[in-house]
Length: 318
Image (cartoon, rainbow, N blue to C red; front, side, top):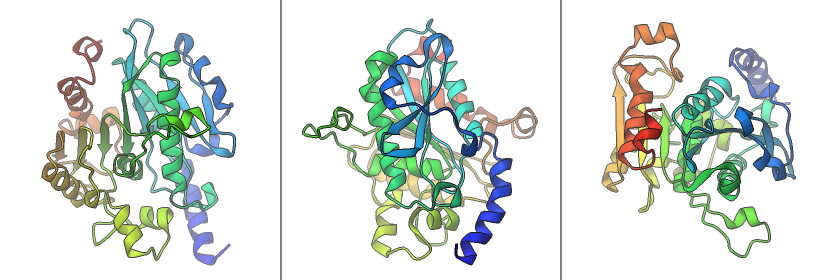
């Protein structure tokens, strides 16, 4: 192992164990054919994305049966600089919040560019993310999910991955022999929390970029993976938030993306809260007391989803 990678592995090991629910502890993993069997009576389990990938998997959280079916769903990508995954804080915790408001939460463990993920690089992450969306849409009927209300949700580097699902196509291939691939991977909405956005310039988050595309990526590749440079004309509605005090991912990332979205007339709600550090997720009780305005972002998100007719009022108020 190169010395630089060894040092990153050693320093990253401690960080990984500090991240609640780190992907190292994900289990069990089952073939994706069993996906429709999950979620009964509040159950949730992990399932592999494909037979040829023994690393990536997803966990399905479904709302209680009292919510009227079909429900919307968010495919969730936890953050961690494409090097580790905060599966609980920015994954399962989000999913549990969403299910309480009538939204299915599909938490994805995706390939990583660190030793923990066997030094995978783009497009492995995007391929896994799009596969998770396709699987959710393919099994929507069995899971009680509306195939036309399946969005993405991501934090930090996971926010960048969610954004890539918007800008990198994902059209269905009706001729593919795999029926899952015949489903579209295009999200119907996006929720991006303090996201990594650009791969170029001073605002780029260097560790995320390095783990995704290496230390010296080709300029054209960095451009293709910079969200603000590639907003499609049919971009779905986007809810986007960060804090002005974020010292990890420059808030300029959010401002750049907001500018690009508004230039394309994309329906969006963008909030830059004044206070709070990076990576807060849903905020702990002590953080809520310290940053009461920032703690309102989940309710603002629900309001945005109601306004866009993605979430029905009775679903949001449950």
